[in-house]
Amino acid sequence: MTSNIFTFGAARLLPILAGLFLITAPFAAQAQEEEDMMRVYRDHARVLKLDRPVAKVIIGNSDIADATVADARTIVLTGRAFGTTNLVILDADGNALVDERILVSVDEGNTVRVYRQTDRTILSCTPNCEQHADRATSSSN
Image 1 (tube, rainbow, N blue to C red):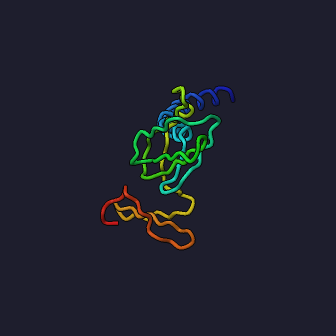
Image 2: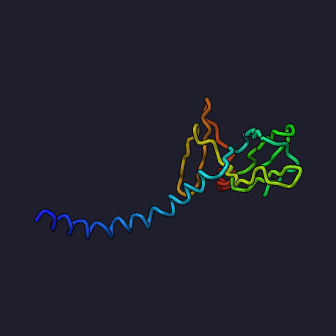
């Protein structure tokens, strides 16, 4: 008799679990996609050391990120604005050394967000809280 109760309960639970999976699957896919991207914080630099000398550096959208060749094997990537773009680094033979998507975001470790209806203010708190220059918010901030 216990198995009948379990079977009935499992049969009712299965559609609920399937529905939860359908609801959360897009969020999991987006989180995985963001993990697969190279991340740099806005107004911060990230140093990329390469195994071979660089011949060309290509940024998909230079308004979002900038790349500077420090030496033949070192690139400095700087986040300029929030968003995504791509980075392609080629060697002298035209082979791709790097072909990555880049996510430029805010360093959330030391920030506080204040929401007032549809307005958002981001405060950077290192060591004192100051309003963060967030271009994505409304003009009233």
